[in-house]
Structure formats: structure tokens, C-alpha cells
Image 1 (cartoon, rainbow, N blue to C red):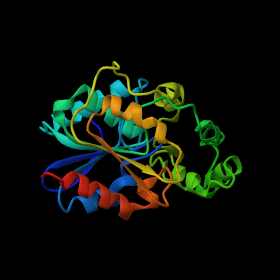
Image 2 (cartoon, one colour):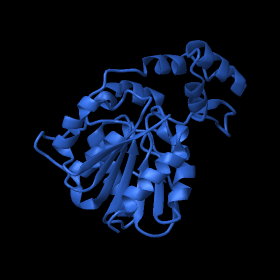
Image 3 (tube, rainbow, N blue to C red):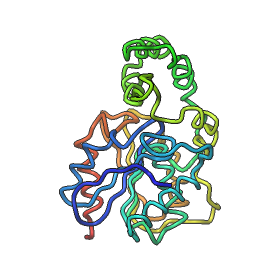
Length: 260
């Protein structure tokens, strides 16, 4: 699979994986900052952004996509950063291909199953009839109706909207149907035996206002990531990269540059 990507800078490679419904653009400003010291790749994962759409979607498959991408770039090892769903994909990759990961950064997600939370988002997206809407504000109005008081989520989803040049109709960049059909796989934990570990430096970053990574998750983290540390970013929710980009950049840079 040929994943869509952008790259910036020069030096030791860093690959950034976005979360559910995201695109590489969500991380572009941070990638450019990290590019002062690293060669940074931001990727659209399958069924997202400008990357191909496929029916199969689970963490082992996303790990294989990343493995193939690195081979295409003649990249034998890299630092991997993943947020949310991308964090699970990054963990899966590190556990499957530990020799190809120098350091791992996991942003606001733990190696455990989750129990939903996006049902309203899927419902809002499916409520939009892309065959009939003619203006972006029409889509925004429908999303706001189904997601009241969730301005950040509506804005985030609208970044997924594009207009087909040939037909003039709006379309979602993400393959919403494939993501919906595979939602149980997205909620699942990385798929590895309980005794498999990644023994290189790993940084878990959580937002202080987020509930995705709890103190009681530390045991599961240490079970698979034996050299893990945890930092909490104040005044940040789940989208740490949007809420506190400077604090996140500082934490990631300090971690990646330690011992180099």
C-alpha cells in the first residue's frame, strides 16, 4: 500500500501517526518544529486522508502498513510517535518489530480495550447526505445539530470534508463505512501475546483533563513496555497536540534527544 505522507527536515527519522478521523495535517505544525532536529514523516493511515481505502482495518494491519512504508523509504529504524488510535498502531508496531523502533512516544492512549465513545460522532457523520448538501455550512449545521456543545469535534470533522473536483459533490476523506464496520477493532487493545515486551525507551504522554490514560493503567503499560515513563500535560485534553502543542513539543524533544 502506498500511504500518503509528507516529510520535513533532516537527521534521525521520526514517524508520526494520527488518531481516528484524523489526517497528517493534524500534526504538520508539530512535525515542522521537530524537523529542526529530525527527519520527520507524517502519514495518512489507511482509510484516512489521501491514503487508500480498504475494508480491513485492525492494529496488526496498520503495523504492516507502517512496516511496508519504512521499507519503501529504505528506513531500517525510526522513532515512532502515535496519538490515540495511532498510538495503539505505534505500540503494535513496536511490539511486532522492536528492532525497527529506536524510541516510542504514545500520546493519550493505553494498551487496553476501550468501550466506545464515538457512536455519536458516527451518527452525526451518517446524518449528512453528501448527495444533497451543496455548501460546507450545510454540513456544519447538521454536525452541530447532532453534536451540540462539541465545537472542537465539529471543527475536527469538517477538516475531513473535501469536494470532488469531477462531480462537485462533497465527500469524506476518511472511509467512514470501513471505520464504522471495524470500530470494535479500533477499540481493541494492541494484539500481542501477554509475554511480548518492548524494552527500549518509551514515553507515554497524557492530557491532565483527559480520561484515556488512568493511573491504574500503569501496570498494563509496564507489562509490555519495560522502559516506559509517563508525563502529564497540564491544561490538555485528549487532543494534546491541539491543546498544548508547545508543552508537547518540549516533552517529545527532550525525550528523543536524551542519550543521543
